[in-house]
Image 1 (cartoon, one colour):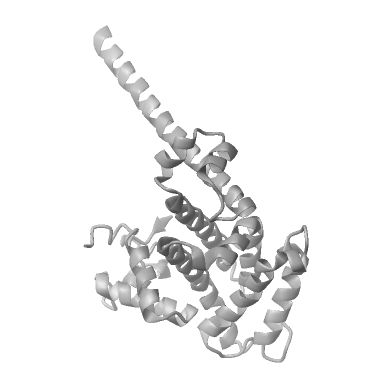
Image 2 (image 1 turned 90 degrees about the vertical axis):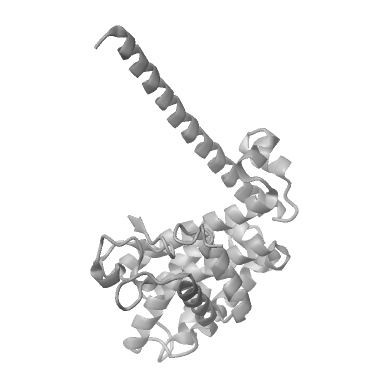
Length: 215
Length: 80
């Protein structure tokens, strides 16, 4: 091998490394903006938040938000999608351990607790969001239902929980926790409503759907 | 871990694959009884019905959400 071809290979290798690190950097910046958006949406409200504040929180130039997400609406949709993916991963892990209905619902609460400020804003502002964001919310609930249904069916077979419409069971659960999240300043001022009341809500819901009361 | 190209579900166990065939890129829920992959309309109907059953939504609203989900999945990205 002569020196010339070695030099060419070296320069190709350097270029490949530079491309990889540029791609990694791009992903990192995207992640940083998304994390900042979730914080700012939770703090200021999804509709009130500004991309300037999100850029400031992320420590990037304002234009960078649009390079990575195109529009504020797309950033909202990406934040919902990211929340849904994290929740699905958590529930998937819970189901793999052979969890029952109570454990899946407890994992659902823990997933919400992780980004409670953002999720509470989603609950409060959902009817005002874009069609795209509304669809993303339906899909997020669908991923939760996908993990919950096998647990419910197994608990029904062993006659632990009552037979009732799946959608009414799921909506009764969502209705309960969403009410507490939307009004969390009344239920637990200055602290997490999931920490303060989550266990009580879970116990109550399980007693409603269980055969022979509390489970 | 493989993700189903037609619905996005993670596929780990043999029973996640159509007829237990781990070489397939789509999951058991997206397969017909003979193991072949459902077409766009069959998958859309399946996803819509799951949303209606589990969330009680109006069928039109459920169908719009299902279409939006499918537009992002590898199997349906090029569907007009």
